[in-house]
Length: 270
Ligand SMILES: Nc1ncnc2c1ncn2[C@@H]1O[C@H](COP(=O)(O)OP(=O)(O)OP(=O)(O)O)[C@@H](O)[C@H]1O
Ligand SMILES: [Mg+2]
Image (cartoon, rainbow, N blue to C red; front, side):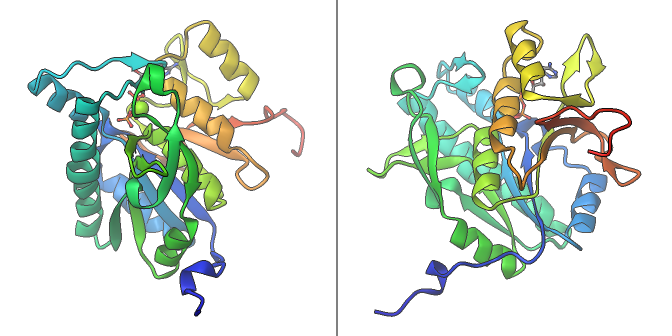
Protein backbone atom coordinates (compact mmCIF):
# COMPACT_ATOMS: atom_id res chain seq x y z
CA UNK A 1 0.00 0.00 0.00
CA UNK A 2 1.37 3.42 -0.87
CA UNK A 3 1.33 6.22 1.68
CA UNK A 4 -0.70 9.20 0.61
CA UNK A 5 1.04 12.56 0.72
CA UNK A 6 -1.76 13.73 3.01
CA UNK A 7 -0.91 11.23 5.73
CA UNK A 8 2.61 12.64 6.10
CA UNK A 9 3.11 15.51 8.52
CA UNK A 10 3.28 18.81 6.67
CA UNK A 11 5.02 21.55 8.61
CA UNK A 12 4.08 25.15 7.99
CA UNK A 13 7.21 27.26 7.53
CA UNK A 14 5.59 30.59 8.44
CA UNK A 15 3.29 31.52 11.35
CA UNK A 16 -0.43 31.10 10.73
CA UNK A 17 -3.14 33.67 11.42
CA UNK A 18 -6.70 32.36 11.71
CA UNK A 19 -9.25 35.11 11.02
CA UNK A 20 -12.87 34.61 11.97
CA UNK A 21 -15.11 37.01 10.07
CA UNK A 22 -18.53 37.67 11.61
CA UNK A 23 -21.62 37.41 9.45
CA UNK A 24 -22.36 41.10 9.85
CA UNK A 25 -18.95 41.90 8.34
CA UNK A 26 -19.19 39.73 5.26
CA UNK A 27 -21.14 42.19 3.14
CA UNK A 28 -19.05 45.15 4.13
CA UNK A 29 -15.49 43.84 3.98
CA UNK A 30 -13.55 47.04 3.37
CA UNK A 31 -10.70 47.54 0.96
CA UNK A 32 -8.42 48.50 3.85
CA UNK A 33 -9.22 45.19 5.56
CA UNK A 34 -8.33 43.29 2.40
CA UNK A 35 -5.13 45.32 2.07
CA UNK A 36 -4.24 44.25 5.66
CA UNK A 37 -4.74 40.62 4.63
CA UNK A 38 -2.52 41.07 1.57
CA UNK A 39 0.13 42.68 3.79
CA UNK A 40 -0.17 39.90 6.38
CA UNK A 41 0.29 37.20 3.73
CA UNK A 42 3.79 38.44 2.93
CA UNK A 43 5.12 36.81 6.10
CA UNK A 44 2.25 34.65 7.35
CA UNK A 45 -0.20 32.03 6.28
CA UNK A 46 -3.80 33.20 6.53
CA UNK A 47 -6.97 31.15 6.87
CA UNK A 48 -10.58 32.34 7.21
CA UNK A 49 -13.58 30.96 9.05
CA UNK A 50 -16.78 32.93 8.51
CA UNK A 51 -20.14 33.33 10.23
CA UNK A 52 -23.46 34.28 8.69
CA UNK A 53 -25.85 35.12 11.55
CA UNK A 54 -27.75 38.06 10.01
CA UNK A 55 -28.18 36.32 6.64
CA UNK A 56 -29.46 33.14 8.34
CA UNK A 57 -31.88 35.23 10.44
CA UNK A 58 -33.15 36.99 7.31
CA UNK A 59 -33.78 33.74 5.47
CA UNK A 60 -35.47 32.13 8.51
CA UNK A 61 -37.75 35.15 8.86
CA UNK A 62 -38.60 35.08 5.16
CA UNK A 63 -39.58 31.43 5.44
CA UNK A 64 -41.26 31.94 8.85
CA UNK A 65 -39.07 29.31 10.51
CA UNK A 66 -38.77 29.98 14.26
CA UNK A 67 -35.27 30.19 15.75
CA UNK A 68 -34.00 30.72 19.29
CA UNK A 69 -30.58 31.26 20.90
CA UNK A 70 -29.30 29.52 24.02
CA UNK A 71 -26.19 31.23 25.50
CA UNK A 72 -25.37 32.78 22.15
CA UNK A 73 -25.69 29.46 20.27
CA UNK A 74 -28.44 28.98 17.72
CA UNK A 75 -30.76 26.10 18.58
CA UNK A 76 -30.66 24.13 15.33
CA UNK A 77 -33.81 22.17 14.49
CA UNK A 78 -34.01 20.25 11.20
CA UNK A 79 -35.61 23.11 9.20
CA UNK A 80 -33.11 25.59 10.71
CA UNK A 81 -30.23 23.29 9.76
CA UNK A 82 -31.38 23.21 6.15
CA UNK A 83 -31.20 27.02 5.95
CA UNK A 84 -27.89 27.15 7.86
CA UNK A 85 -26.33 24.74 5.36
CA UNK A 86 -27.57 26.72 2.37
CA UNK A 87 -26.57 30.11 3.71
CA UNK A 88 -23.19 29.23 5.26
CA UNK A 89 -21.97 26.51 2.90
CA UNK A 90 -23.35 28.25 -0.19
CA UNK A 91 -24.00 31.97 -0.30
CA UNK A 92 -21.77 33.38 2.44
CA UNK A 93 -18.81 31.14 1.67
CA UNK A 94 -18.85 32.17 -1.97
CA UNK A 95 -19.37 35.80 -1.07
CA UNK A 96 -16.23 36.00 1.08
CA UNK A 97 -14.16 33.73 -1.12
CA UNK A 98 -15.20 35.76 -4.19
CA UNK A 99 -14.40 39.12 -2.57
CA UNK A 100 -10.89 37.99 -1.63
CA UNK A 101 -10.36 36.46 -5.08
CA UNK A 102 -11.36 39.73 -6.72
CA UNK A 103 -8.35 41.27 -4.94
CA UNK A 104 -5.98 38.62 -6.27
CA UNK A 105 -6.01 36.41 -3.16
CA UNK A 106 -6.05 32.75 -4.16
CA UNK A 107 -8.85 31.32 -2.02
CA UNK A 108 -10.46 27.90 -1.74
CA UNK A 109 -13.98 27.90 -0.32
CA UNK A 110 -14.56 24.85 1.87
CA UNK A 111 -17.49 23.53 3.83
CA UNK A 112 -16.43 22.45 7.31
CA UNK A 113 -18.55 19.39 6.50
CA UNK A 114 -15.57 18.03 4.52
CA UNK A 115 -12.90 18.69 7.14
CA UNK A 116 -14.52 18.68 10.59
CA UNK A 117 -15.73 15.62 12.48
CA UNK A 118 -18.13 16.61 15.24
CA UNK A 119 -20.34 15.20 17.96
CA UNK A 120 -23.51 16.83 19.33
CA UNK A 121 -22.86 19.60 21.83
CA UNK A 122 -26.19 19.05 23.60
CA UNK A 123 -28.75 17.44 21.31
CA UNK A 124 -31.64 17.95 23.74
CA UNK A 125 -31.28 21.70 24.21
CA UNK A 126 -29.43 22.76 21.03
CA UNK A 127 -30.46 20.20 18.37
CA UNK A 128 -28.01 19.84 15.48
CA UNK A 129 -25.22 21.94 16.96
CA UNK A 130 -21.80 20.35 16.69
CA UNK A 131 -18.86 20.13 19.04
CA UNK A 132 -15.59 19.78 17.12
CA UNK A 133 -13.89 16.41 17.62
CA UNK A 134 -11.33 16.44 14.81
CA UNK A 135 -10.10 18.81 12.10
CA UNK A 136 -8.45 17.46 8.95
CA UNK A 137 -5.39 19.62 9.45
CA UNK A 138 -3.40 17.77 6.73
CA UNK A 139 -5.69 19.00 3.98
CA UNK A 140 -5.56 22.57 5.31
CA UNK A 141 -1.75 22.49 5.66
CA UNK A 142 -1.46 21.20 2.09
CA UNK A 143 -3.62 24.03 0.75
CA UNK A 144 -1.75 26.65 2.79
CA UNK A 145 1.65 25.40 1.66
CA UNK A 146 0.46 25.42 -1.95
CA UNK A 147 -0.36 29.13 -1.62
CA UNK A 148 -4.12 28.94 -1.09
CA UNK A 149 -6.15 30.79 1.53
CA UNK A 150 -8.80 28.38 2.85
CA UNK A 151 -12.20 29.99 3.54
CA UNK A 152 -14.19 27.68 5.81
CA UNK A 153 -17.95 27.59 6.42
CA UNK A 154 -18.56 26.48 10.03
CA UNK A 155 -20.30 23.16 9.51
CA UNK A 156 -19.28 19.65 10.50
CA UNK A 157 -20.40 16.10 10.17
CA UNK A 158 -20.87 13.42 12.79
CA UNK A 159 -19.40 9.92 12.46
CA UNK A 160 -22.79 8.89 11.06
CA UNK A 161 -22.59 11.53 8.35
CA UNK A 162 -25.13 13.92 9.88
CA UNK A 163 -24.37 17.56 9.08
CA UNK A 164 -24.20 19.84 12.11
CA UNK A 165 -24.09 23.59 12.61
CA UNK A 166 -20.98 24.78 14.48
CA UNK A 167 -20.79 28.25 15.97
CA UNK A 168 -18.26 30.06 13.79
CA UNK A 169 -16.24 31.31 16.80
CA UNK A 170 -15.98 27.77 18.18
CA UNK A 171 -15.01 26.49 14.72
CA UNK A 172 -12.28 29.12 14.28
CA UNK A 173 -10.78 28.31 17.68
CA UNK A 174 -10.75 24.57 16.90
CA UNK A 175 -9.07 25.16 13.53
CA UNK A 176 -6.50 27.47 15.16
CA UNK A 177 -5.74 24.81 17.76
CA UNK A 178 -5.47 21.98 15.20
CA UNK A 179 -3.08 23.99 13.02
CA UNK A 180 -1.12 25.44 15.94
CA UNK A 181 -1.88 28.96 14.76
CA UNK A 182 0.09 31.83 16.23
CA UNK A 183 -2.82 34.28 16.23
CA UNK A 184 -6.59 34.05 16.29
CA UNK A 185 -8.54 37.17 15.36
CA UNK A 186 -12.29 37.52 15.75
CA UNK A 187 -13.34 40.23 13.30
CA UNK A 188 -16.75 41.52 14.37
CA UNK A 189 -19.08 44.53 14.37
CA UNK A 190 -17.94 46.06 17.69
CA UNK A 191 -14.47 47.43 18.64
CA UNK A 192 -13.88 44.60 21.13
CA UNK A 193 -15.26 43.81 24.59
CA UNK A 194 -17.12 46.89 25.80
CA UNK A 195 -17.93 47.68 29.43
CA UNK A 196 -20.10 50.74 30.04
CA UNK A 197 -19.39 51.78 26.46
CA UNK A 198 -15.59 51.72 27.00
CA UNK A 199 -13.27 49.36 25.12
CA UNK A 200 -11.32 46.91 27.28
CA UNK A 201 -7.89 46.66 25.70
CA UNK A 202 -7.08 43.47 27.60
CA UNK A 203 -9.07 40.72 29.28
CA UNK A 204 -8.01 37.61 31.19
CA UNK A 205 -10.13 34.45 31.66
CA UNK A 206 -11.06 35.43 35.24
CA UNK A 207 -12.15 38.94 34.22
CA UNK A 208 -14.19 37.46 31.35
CA UNK A 209 -15.84 35.07 33.78
CA UNK A 210 -16.90 38.00 35.96
CA UNK A 211 -18.15 39.98 32.93
CA UNK A 212 -20.32 37.05 31.83
CA UNK A 213 -21.68 36.59 35.37
CA UNK A 214 -22.64 40.27 35.69
CA UNK A 215 -24.22 40.30 32.20
CA UNK A 216 -21.75 42.74 30.60
CA UNK A 217 -20.82 40.01 28.12
CA UNK A 218 -23.91 38.37 26.63
CA UNK A 219 -25.31 36.80 23.46
CA UNK A 220 -22.92 36.34 20.52
CA UNK A 221 -19.99 37.66 22.58
CA UNK A 222 -20.16 34.61 24.88
CA UNK A 223 -19.03 31.94 22.36
CA UNK A 224 -16.41 34.40 21.09
CA UNK A 225 -14.71 34.95 24.44
CA UNK A 226 -15.05 31.34 25.62
CA UNK A 227 -13.60 30.07 22.32
CA UNK A 228 -10.78 32.58 22.56
CA UNK A 229 -9.91 31.33 26.05
CA UNK A 230 -10.08 27.67 25.01
CA UNK A 231 -7.66 28.35 22.14
CA UNK A 232 -4.97 29.94 24.34
CA UNK A 233 -1.83 27.81 24.51
CA UNK A 234 1.97 28.07 24.56
CA UNK A 235 1.76 28.59 20.80
CA UNK A 236 -1.24 30.94 20.77
CA UNK A 237 -0.51 33.37 23.57
CA UNK A 238 -3.29 35.80 22.80
CA UNK A 239 -6.51 35.95 20.84
CA UNK A 240 -8.04 39.25 19.72
CA UNK A 241 -11.43 40.71 19.07
CA UNK A 242 -11.21 43.46 16.45
CA UNK A 243 -13.65 45.63 14.56
CA UNK A 244 -13.97 44.86 10.86
CA UNK A 245 -15.51 48.28 10.26
CA UNK A 246 -12.53 50.18 11.63
CA UNK A 247 -8.77 50.03 11.40
CA UNK A 248 -7.47 46.62 12.34
CA UNK A 249 -3.78 47.55 12.37
CA UNK A 250 -2.41 50.72 13.86
CA UNK A 251 1.34 51.37 14.22
CA UNK A 252 2.05 47.66 13.70
CA UNK A 253 -0.44 46.62 16.44
CA UNK A 254 -3.92 45.18 16.21
CA UNK A 255 -6.60 47.45 17.62
CA UNK A 256 -9.25 45.81 19.84
CA UNK A 257 -9.40 43.57 22.93
CA UNK A 258 -6.50 41.20 23.62
CA UNK A 259 -7.48 38.03 25.45
CA UNK A 260 -4.57 36.42 27.28
CA UNK A 261 -3.89 34.23 30.31
CA UNK A 262 -2.10 36.87 32.35
CA UNK A 263 -2.73 40.60 32.44
CA UNK A 264 0.16 42.76 31.31
CA UNK A 265 1.86 44.26 34.35
CA UNK A 266 3.15 47.75 33.66
CA UNK A 267 6.92 47.89 34.10
CA UNK A 268 7.48 44.15 33.74
CA UNK A 269 9.22 42.60 30.75
CA UNK A 270 6.72 39.78 30.43
N1 LIG B 1 -19.54 43.29 26.35
C1 LIG B 1 -19.80 43.32 25.04
N2 LIG B 1 -19.07 44.12 24.24
C2 LIG B 1 -19.32 44.20 22.92
N3 LIG B 1 -20.28 43.49 22.28
C3 LIG B 1 -21.05 42.65 23.02
C4 LIG B 1 -20.83 42.51 24.43
N4 LIG B 1 -21.71 41.60 24.91
C5 LIG B 1 -22.44 41.20 23.87
N5 LIG B 1 -22.06 41.81 22.72
C6 LIG B 1 -22.71 41.58 21.42
O1 LIG B 1 -21.92 40.65 20.66
C7 LIG B 1 -22.13 40.97 19.28
C8 LIG B 1 -21.09 40.26 18.42
O2 LIG B 1 -21.41 38.88 18.32
P1 LIG B 1 -22.31 38.34 17.11
O3 LIG B 1 -22.46 36.88 17.29
O4 LIG B 1 -23.55 39.14 16.97
O5 LIG B 1 -21.44 38.68 15.81
P2 LIG B 1 -20.34 37.82 15.05
O6 LIG B 1 -19.95 36.65 15.90
O7 LIG B 1 -19.26 38.75 14.65
O8 LIG B 1 -21.11 37.32 13.77
P3 LIG B 1 -21.61 35.80 13.45
O9 LIG B 1 -22.33 35.33 14.69
O10 LIG B 1 -22.49 35.97 12.26
O11 LIG B 1 -20.39 34.99 13.15
C9 LIG B 1 -22.10 42.48 19.28
O12 LIG B 1 -22.69 43.03 18.13
C10 LIG B 1 -22.84 42.84 20.57
O13 LIG B 1 -24.21 43.01 20.31
MG1 LIG C 1 -21.47 35.19 16.58
